[in-house]
Amino acid sequence: MSQIVLITGGSSGIGKSVGEYLSSNGFIVYGTSRNPENYKESKFPILELDVKKVETIHQTVKTIIDKEGRIDVIINNAGAGITGAIEEIPETEIRANFDTNFFGPINVIKAVLPQMRKQHSGLIINITSIAGYMGLPYRGIYSASKGALELLTESFRMELKGFNIQMTNIAPGDFATNIAAGRYHAPLLNDSPYKKPYGDTLNLMNAHVDNGSDPNMMAQAVLKVINTKKPKAHYKVGEFMQKFSIVLKRILPDKVYEKILMKHYKL
Image 1 (cartoon, rainbow, N blue to C red):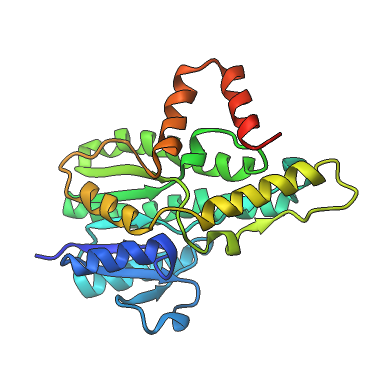
Image 2 (image 1 turned 120 degrees about the vertical axis):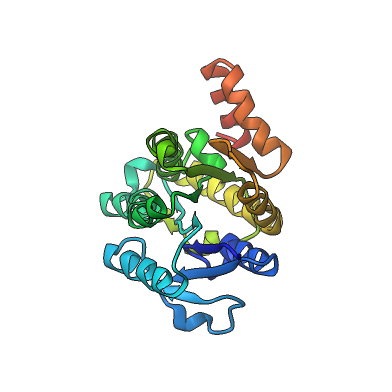
């Protein structure tokens, strides 16, 4: 029997690659978008869902359960980038980012848990970020929202163990997607004390995404996790140095690691 998969943010980038790959491997996949009418050529159904609107989450989950009778895998992929000096990012933008990257996945998880408990089975995969393992300059809000989701998963895993519901994180590095186009960029202000370092860092970040890895690497990693009987809490997917940076953070003194980061970003 084919497993039923729901991918939030499944219309482009990593979500689209994962959806197409799982579909080609025999899964029944549903993706989501705030504007599904724009993706009529998708290779799998795209349903309307905005992770910031709880009613759309519940409606989509109900639609799938009514049609398929179950949901086996949830992939919390919908996310938003944000850059800027923390001092200069409006509070409304900070809250909006956490609404998408943190509270959105929580509400999706809450919506599917009753069905998964009923099935006594289920797997929830949260797509986080290697940036969530460290506070990065001019990406502090993004790092914080993804890091919060990483920790939340650890708590959820213990709470859900008795229901045979698995949960894990997959943290990607830089991938060649359109995330940079959809980011909130705090404007480069001429009179800002951060103008030059923020501008230089922004150019470096965009170059990393443009030269990022093939999103199919993430798709293969997701399938491997789905086929793992008891997934670990954390997985990292990306170039060697991106994954190794997490190891360095764990073993190096804080100040030494901070200097390495600042040298990398030319600060």
